[in-house]
Length: 74
Image (spheres, rainbow, N blue to C red):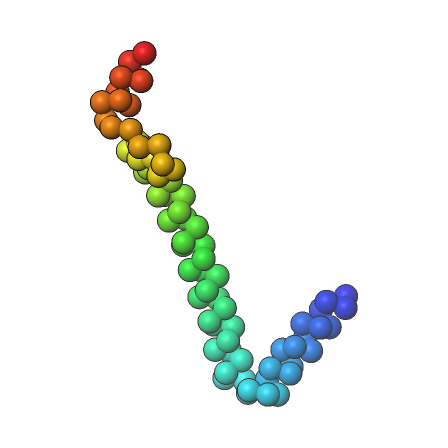
């Protein structure tokens, strides 16, 4: 319950210091940052999936296409 009071106090202090319009802009900025972080996370997962499908190894274990194909045939 105290966390709710602290959050309300912070919002009231933000409004008192910067005004309503700037406080709304701060929350809009935080919303955009959270959405962008989610998009970056999804892009990271897509990159890992594509690297796996295309057999691209980024951890220093580079193999040529023929070596990978020979390993698959064994």
